[in-house]
Length: 260
View: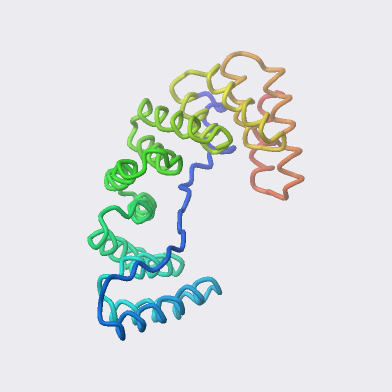
């Protein structure tokens, strides 16, 4: 096995879902005024606590809001956020599901539930959630980006590239989409396209070390060893400046192999 290709995932393969956790306003439905006021008060307390990082306190407050007004989708949604921060993934999924049952057009709830399912390895369910979010909001670049990750995880590289491309069309400055599309293009043997994506990243951010590292590996694949060494040297320098010790070690190892 070619040792250089073996290491392609070690420099800059940073495919990570963009976790969307916006805090939304309470959607108070008509109820007796006492219950409505109580729910709103607990909801506001929950927001205050969540913004302070008091996630357990936030959960307690949102639970009180739900008890006062059981159809308050935003209380379930924000309680799910607090559960996520505490690592309570299944409870977060349950709360996002409840928010969706109350409000089937709650696109952020689909995205966040999809993110958790993706992190738990359930890519098929995650794709379903991101697809539903896109039906509700077809111009959300994060939903396309996250769906691309799971499509790639399932080996559907063509569909992943389509989603990364749509992400970039909606947000031309979305650097992780260029990075991941470039990596996937490399996996498909489309090394010139990969080089183009990594180069575009460097136009947007000249200090993006992963782009140098991955472009260097792509240059190896097209036989341009001098360019590969130059890029890997730049990656090492930037990783050092950023204090990323493990990435420095990996990039140096690749550079050593290229120079020998």
